[in-house]
Length: 115
Length: 114
Image 1 (cartoon, rainbow over the protein chains, first blue to last red):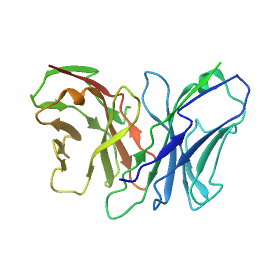
Image 2 (tube, each protein chain N blue to C red; image 1 turned 180 degrees about the horizontal axis):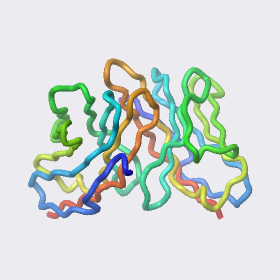
Image 3 (tube, each protein chain N blue to C red; image 1 turned 120 degrees about the horizontal axis):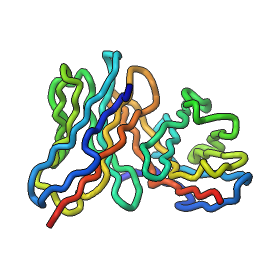
Image 4 (tube, rainbow over the protein chains, first blue to last red; image 1 turned 180 degrees about the vertical axis):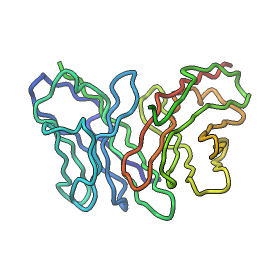
């Protein structure tokens, strides 16, 4: 069964460093998303991406964040200058709306630790 | 106001019993979708079941069913014949109208006892 994959599974970085989180969505999906989950808290939407541009973003997704689909398979989230409060699990998701169902399938997550 | 409310922070259930996880939602949109996801201790987010606001039948997927009561704005998850592997965090979530994002509740941690 096709699935969303994410690399790395765990990333440790120093505050102020740039990180790139990588995702490979399900191959025939058209919509891509990033969410984050701070430890012990609920999952929060960051951004959605369709047709090579951002279609929706939350207030969390400020100028230090960016997304890119550099080729036909990868979808990346870049955090330019990490802060301590960026430590969280980051989930990539993808969907392919058909009919009334537009289920977003999540990857296994990347745990980001900012020191 | 909370868009998704899960009132049970934790539940303990005996193996093989059925369990109902509560979820209420708040939206003014006529078109919306409701989801349940399972998050085991390993951290991944596993899709379980979907219910569209216009679906007349309650959604079912194997041992999972969604008790959709539109007038009450509730979308409870029912797990029949619970198994030890069902122990996990369960999130109710909603997508409103034409918006992309899914809004999650705070989750219910389910413990299945042998």
